Image 1 (cartoon, rainbow, N blue to C red):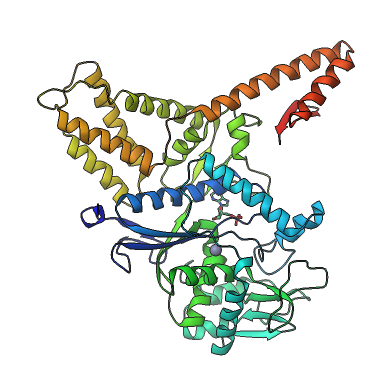
Image 2: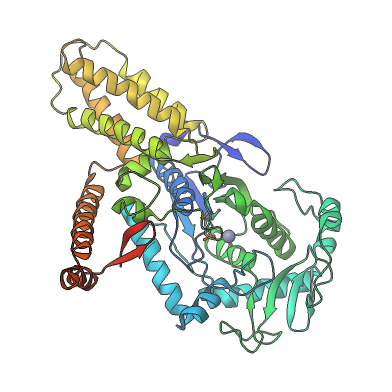
Length: 493
Ligand code: AMP
Ligand code: ZN
């Protein structure tokens, strides 16, 4: 059904800072690119929030009847430690520390990423390309940018010439920064920096002898700059102009700004019609991040094995919690918020479970079609899931009144209500009725806690044979106990 013809979607475009009517370049078709994870460690819940926001957007676009090509990449090379052109490659560093191949790092954390997303009931993207699979395409773009005069080669590296580009285009238009301000705010170039100006960024970096991830190029052995992969892969699979580019707010600058500059410098065209940015998940009021340690892993929530929350929460409850906030708002994770979401989720699921059995009457006491349209209006207003959920709870209220015999519903309206609830709750929000992943983990958590207690008692009685047996047999089952001053915790491998 081509619902998009009647349901007029508006999206907040970061490029224009306005809500705009969504009109794809080719009617009925949407090309969407979202920056994927850098696979050097487990994805934390903050990363999941951004990907979940775009999963919801993907789901709603499909629900409206668009044919969507959704490309979400895997960054498996080129992302340096400090997000600029310095430091070690994040994946190489992990490989060096663990003494394994970089591709083993990539494989391990790509598998983890997919496992977690599956638990959260994500739809797979249409294409999931990797940076290392597109080195040739990246080299071709560098050649084009060099030919057009917007880059320079120096000592085997190639840098994007931001000043030269800014003479003909506008660098900073997405993030609202002015090049003059950037110049006056930048630090002196470090002595080992080859680039002419500190705002220039690497398109290709020469690989020093110890750098493991390297490829031959016209400029010698090296590796691509972080921003280039997304330009190469989005152009290859979606074309020089496509509809939606997404990612977390923190990628607006420099990553997305540089993507625009690369595309414009190589083919003269602004690549993206609508830039969508998802806001951050915070913990204790601070951005969740790998680098600061202020984060929680999804599995730590599903098992309850963490020091932040009072109990385990299932993926559906966590998903519902995320959907209760607008994707452009900051969301803070807390025990109270998750407990409240769990209650709300259960109330919603109970109402849905009772839908089929609702008795029907000749007429209805409330306007189901109006309620359905309110759900669409919410989603058409830049994917406003909290308002959608408020409307779904309005439906829950009616469902409960009908159950109690205090309101009536016609057969025709009942069918609309079933379709509306199913469509929005399962297809659009991506919630599932099963809440058992959390239950299983909760049970496991309870059993391990009990064994930890018995082990502590054995140790107190100097019965070390029993306490070691508990520890070793749990380890054989893949459950590691860790003793510290605060007590004993466990992890499941
Ligand atoms: P990375 O693997 O570091 O490249 O990040 C993957 C995605 O997660 C990017 O789109 C980031 O913007 C996003 N991200 C990182 N931290 C958070 C956070 N605390 N909340 C929401 N999204 C985040
Ligand atoms: Zn990207």
